[in-house]
Structures are given as structure tokens and as C-alpha cells.
Image (cartoon, rainbow, N blue to C red; front, side, top):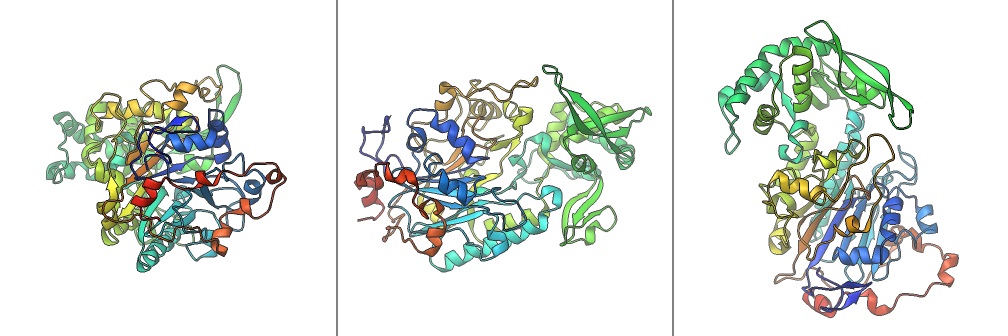
Length: 559
């Protein structure tokens, strides 16, 4: 959408620049809506102006981390009643395996553009109870707003696969009912190898020499001469490296904050180098289990009952997690240097990773995504419009300032049914590039850091730098686009993804567009379930603010 008012008008102090009746959908893992919304409310216009400045018609947020009780008690501050919008919530009430208040998704929709909502669309009480999926019906299409479970090192992979299977079935049911499907959210998976920074991509080391001999895949990058030499060195050293990693140990050690003097216990992984010295490899870990699960080289799998299978027997287990001989490019480079004394230069290592790096998603999850894309006919909207974009990520480890190195992953998606995508999706304003070639890594880094305006946290402590006005307003663009919306680092460790739809010669939203407050929809609005004391003192929003502009309603087929 371009704006909710006539061209040139002001809404919450924001000048409306265009009145093109498009529909703009954003999806964003906010990593705790209470904190994120508090940041947003500090700036002029608060949450309402935030939506207008982003030209938002539909905002899907994940990891809201709120219970229904907290939402109902604090609806005003949490933006549940923003004038002109309906909000719908799927909260985790602690009835499943995870504690109350974790996860949670919410969808904000401009009034007049939504028919109904359902916070239990998977038809499975155990899956729905975690607050990970919310469906909103917009007439001709539905939006599934999801926060897919992570694999938790493999321990939740069986649950994740159940969730994904139920989600796919729910989307199929919507199509049978005549609806086009949009899937938006944090999918906790990667579609392509390029959706991870090259240092994070897994390499199947024992196969590297054979892959080099076979040559590059069709349309794949050929490795450099230096990389070919490096592969020979890696292959020759691999038996020794693998033996050292099989004999690795993990044990606690202390780190110290140089500014405060505070000490912390961490867990490290130790292996014996060719020199005989025992050396710590990899980053420090906060918990022992993470250290234990690092640098495993003999295959890892998970049974349906969540039993972990290491080494022998991995191939017969239900879910494969990692094949034997697999290390990330970064871990491989570190092992070669520390254990073998062989330096593999970053250019050569990147060339190897670009040519042979894998997706880094468990095979069962990858198969699910490929089935959704190729069998169900959905389109990865970002990849469709920007097939050659490099290092455009949506999530980083901010405790290690990785956004400022742009070492992240793209795990947030908007997938669209192909016919609907081809009929309505538009690229719009394109990607933020700050004057650089848009598909290039320098452009991606500049976008991630607002061209250097954002500053990293100090490793001496003190937390994230405060969010100042210039950094906050740097996120807003004059016109919307399909792609990525670079929100400030203080708001979340994820940034938003977006989809721009135009009516074309068809209606995007078909009558009726009056919200049907059936039982399922009411369950999605716990903030309306009971009147609050503040309701008696607040002025109701003017009716005119509730509806899209006349031009938009006409273009979308709304009387």
C-alpha cells in the first residue's frame, strides 16, 4: 500500500507521498514485542506512525513473547488497539511443552482488509498451543503468519517436522477453499547456500577432492587455483584432523570483563594438535551441551523419540541432522590452522565455500521447503526478485556484533502461491544499497549498518548503544518494496521482510471485507475479551480513520 489517506495529507505527522492503491505486507521477528514497542513509542507518533512510515497494510510479527493476560492488561501500550488497524494474536499459554509467554505471533491488519482470523489453524492442540501460527483471511487470499520451531540442536527436530507437516496441510486446505496462500514469518531454515554467510556454510570435507575433479555444477562457480591447492592440503590433512576431533574434550574455563572485572564460566572445546599441544578450538559456549555438540565428525541423527544417534547407526535413524565429515567453512579453516599448522587464506576458503558449501538445513526440513516450492507451487518472493543478491541476511548474532560484519543468515521469508505472485507481486523500490551495486556484498553491509550510522556494542560491556533519532528514522523509505526492511539493531536481532502487491486487473481483497467476529476470531483478540478501566476514559478513534482510502477500496473491489 502506498498510504491510508489522500496524496499530500499528513497522518500522525507523516506526509503521505503516494496514493497508489497497492498492498504492503511486512513480516518481522521482533524477539519480544514489549521491548520493541517500547523503543518505537519513544519516537514521534509511536506505533501508529511507525506503521504509516513503513506504508504497512499487514504486519506479521513473531516471537511476541506475551501471554493473553499480559496483552489484555497492557493492550494500549502494546499497540493492540492502534486506530485504523485490527490486531490478532496467537499466544503461548503454557499448555504445551514450552512455558507460558514464549513464542507468540501477531498480525496487524488495516481495517477493511480482513475477514476473519484463526489462532488454531493447524487443528492440533499440541502444535497450536505453542502460539506459532496465525491465519488471517483477506477474502481472495489468506496469510499464514508463522514462527517455525528451531531444531534445538536436533532435540526438537521431530516436533518441527510435525509442525511443518500440519502447516502444509493447512495451506492445502485453504487452497481447496479457493484461497491463494501467503506464508510469512521466521521459518528457521535456509532455502539456498547463499542464504548463509560463506563462513557458516557446511562443507563435506571427505568429498572435496572428488568435487574439484568433477568440476563445477551447471551455473555454479568454479574454484580458484589457490582454492584447488587448498583442497589438496585439506584432503591430505583430513584423517589427522578427524582423529583429533574424535578425541576432543570439553571443559569449563573462565572469561573476564575487562571493564568491570566480572568473571563468567564458559565451556570450551579442546583438541590435540599435530604438535602435541592441546588447543581450544571454536568459540566459548554458554552451556555444556553446546560445547559437547561441537565439532562432531562421524554423523548425527535424531530418532522420532528425540534420541540422538552419533556415529554408527546414523544412516538408519529417522532424521538425519549431519552427515559424517561435515564442518563449517570457518571451523574447517580454524582446524587446519590450529591443529595442522596449515593456513588456508580467506579468499581460497571463500572460493571453496561458494562452490561446494551446503545449505546448512537438516535434509528433512530442506525437503519440506523444496516440496512447498516445487510441488505446491509457492514462490520465494525475495529470491524471485533478487536472484543474484549476495549476503542479504535477516538475522545475526548480535551478542557478537555479527550484524556489523554482515555474517548472518536469511531465515525470514514470504512465500506466495505462484499464480497469485505472478498476478500481483511487484518489486517496488528495490533493495537499500546506499549508492553501491545493489546485489553486491558492500551494498548489503551498508544496508545492515545504515551505511555506518549504526555502531557495534562494546565488548567491554554496557550493552547495545542507545537508539537515537537519526538511526531510528533511517529505517523508513519513501516507497515500499518487495524485499528486506532494515530495522534498527536495538529493535531485534532480526530485520523485516516485505511483499508489495498490486491489484492488477483482479481484486486483491474481495467483498465481504467486514470483520466477522466468530469464535475463532474472538479468540485471536484477547485484548477485547474484557473491558479495561482505561476504556472508560479513552476517546474512541474517529470512524473515518478505520477504513482504507476511497481510491484503495475501489481498486481492491471494496464498495
